[in-house]
Image 1 (cartoon, rainbow, N blue to C red):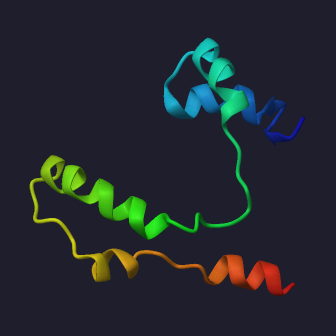
Image 2 (cartoon, rainbow, N blue to C red; image 1 turned 30 degrees about the vertical axis):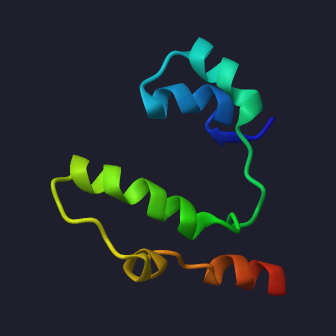
Length: 82
């Protein structure tokens, strides 16, 4: 298992970083993964979430174009290029 901080694994460190109990993190762990890419529908997801986030932050929702500007796929493209 990957050691990220001293002798702590990522699984062991996550509850500390999230202020969650280990049982909750351990139960959720099988559902967590990183596919190494950005979701094809990321902008659509941002657009669906934006009204709620804007209300929570007491601001006007961003336009789809503004949300698109928040997505930077340059790191993924660079990694794929080798």
